[in-house]
Amino acid sequence: MKSPYLLFDFDGTIADSIHPLFEMLNKMAPEIGVQPVTWDEFDRLRDLTPRQILRELKLPLFKMPRLISMVLEEYMHIISHLKPCEGILELLSELKQRQIRHALLSSNDDQNLAAFLTQYQIDSFAWVEGTEGVLNKSSYLRKQIRKHKLGQYDLYYIGDEIRDIEAARRNKIKSIAVSWGLHSHQHLQKQQPNYLVDKPSEILDIMNQTAID
Image 1 (tube, rainbow, N blue to C red):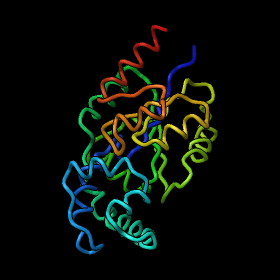
Image 2: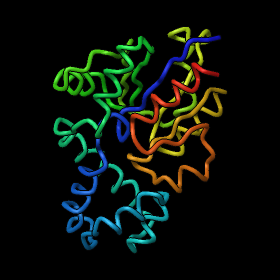
Image 3: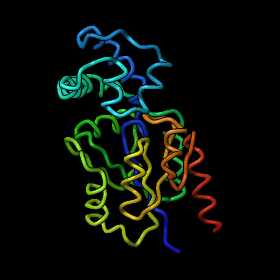
Image 4: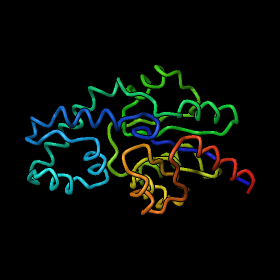
């Protein structure tokens, strides 16, 4: 039986970028000409596409490129303040203890990832791959599987967005969707991931079940 190998997304999966994103968007609200949103409103918006969000906020479509640029620029200012998602440090420690190999893939650059991992003394990842932005997660994931020669393993891609599920499916590997990130449990469930978890410890349950099977 192949050994499991877990490939983690970063934002919203390892690092809690959702609450900072909520605060950041409300800070930007006056500049983009909208009213600040409540958490319940934000919770509904984050399952929508960018076009749908613009429609809900009554913003014209031509403002989308500028809005995305503003969000990315402002996000660079808060990235150093990100904290691990609840239960993630314990999960990574347990994976290391059990010698279940795992790696980190992210659209953040290497410097930001290194700063986060150093700050929280995370040293369990077999390797870390960062970029300056990934538009096509499927091809990026395929590239890393080949680069690190992962075909010999039972691969799981762990992320908080529907495009993570799609990337795993296109690469014919298993997906573990996490509901503590960008997209809600209900929204992720519609995409039929192999597994859907609400807390990090449930990933260990999947590994336990896999070992039994």
